[in-house]
Every structure is written in structure tokens, then in C-alpha cells.
Length: 155
Image 1 (cartoon, rainbow, N blue to C red):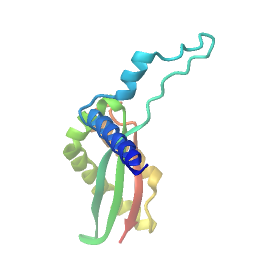
Image 2: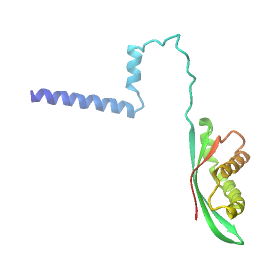
Image 3: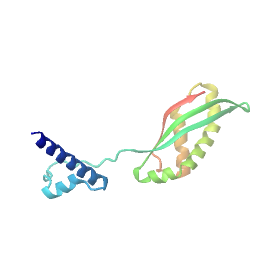
Image 4: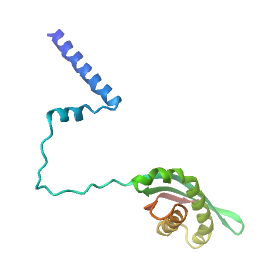
């Protein structure tokens, strides 16, 4: 009885190793199985659902902006930014991140001193609009769908 248990266990380990090896080499064994056996035919009367691509994001990282007021650094604003982009343009946006970082930093260094003079916290909606405008100006319209500010602090 114990020999039979060891034989079954060894067989399961071999099958698991075989399937893992196939996935490692890029072969989907279940897809091959479905080709051999055949999938159930689709219902011709079923309504067709349009394919929805999930949103894709490019991590911008943290933007640290010194706030210069009266010729000295009074505060420091930190924002964690994520860019929502079309999937097919994700690589191009990632390649142009240094240009975006420069444009965003220049825009925020000119905008934040006046913005933080009257209020203690950042207005995310206003900043997102300004950063979106800069992104469209640097990369062209349609390259970035939305600029998301995940977290911000003023020190």
C-alpha cells in the first residue's frame, strides 16, 4: 500500500514538473489541450461584449518641489505621481520621463509659491490640470490620459 502511495506521489510530482517546465518555456499546456479536445462552440445569439482594455499606468515617482518665497526656501512640497496612458503609448511615455520631470518641476516651482501663500495644503484638482497641460505641451495631446496625485505633503 505504501509503495502504491509513493508511486502515485512520484507521478504527480512528475506531471507538476512537466507542466511547470512547459510554462517556463512559454508553452501553455491547457491551450494545447483545448486545441486537441476542442472548445464548446460560442452561442451565436449572445450579445457581443466589446473588449475593454484595462488602464495602464507609468510610475512617475516622487516630485519634490522647493517652495521659494521671499528669496529663500520656506517649504517643500512632495507629490507621488502616476500617469495614466494608453497601453500602446506606455513605452514612449516611459522613455520621455526625464523631459516630463523637468517640465513638471519647472511648472510647480513657478506655481506653488503663490498657491501655498494663501492655503496650507495643495489643491490636487488645480495641480492635476496644470500638470496635464504641461504633459500635453511636452509630449503632445493624447499621450497621457490623466495625471494622478496619489499622495502629497507640504513640509
